[in-house]
Amino acid sequence: MLVIKDFIKKYNDQLVLDIKELSVAPGIYWVKGPNGAGKTSFFRSISGIIPCKGSVEIDGTSLRQNVTAYRRLINYAEAEPVLPAFLTGFELISFYVDSKEGDMKAAGELINYFGIKSFVQNPIGTYSSGMLKKLSVLLAFIGQPKIILLDEPLITIEDTFLPKIYALVKQWHQEREITFLISSHQPLDYERIGHYKTLQLADKTFTCIG
Image (cartoon, rainbow, N blue to C red; front, side, top):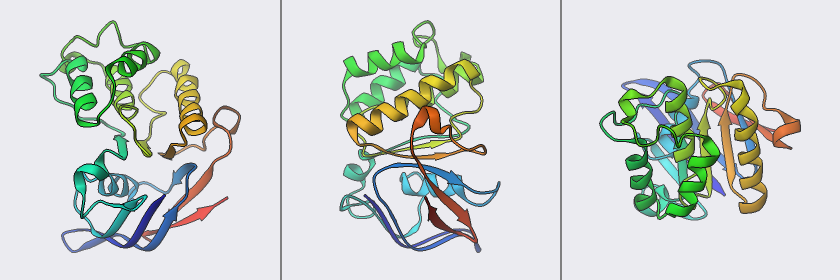
């Protein structure tokens, strides 16, 4: 379970998020809110990429007190990924396998599933936006996370690939009990992903619906 208390995120003196208390039980969540509401700032903060005030814990492991262990429990795919252009996709995947205590065999299966085998050995700087998005989402499934954050995973990617993302999310939630927080401007597809709840972001805080 993700437990957040007294969470505050500011940029300079501008308050972006103010979450007194939020508990996110295992499940699949659609993170909903208007542009500029703070969804990406929330994801980046709880994934440990940018600093924030307050307490953030996953199953009792604290972001503030045990950063390394915490980061192995949460993976994040950005809406507009910026990845090292000089590395190949395979080199970056290998790095994630090492840092996330993952498995290369499982990573190889993901490479095949995401259909990136034909270009994974090429430098990331040569990738199209669709290739880059596939690699970014793939990296979020490396290791043994408890929570996976997917920021706008349904854009900048061909429509024919969307069922595969839905299927993988549904499978990992059902079989591995992974919690997914998925931001999207359009509602998630119930028929493909199954039941999900909504985290509505408004007035700088979250309300859980459903």
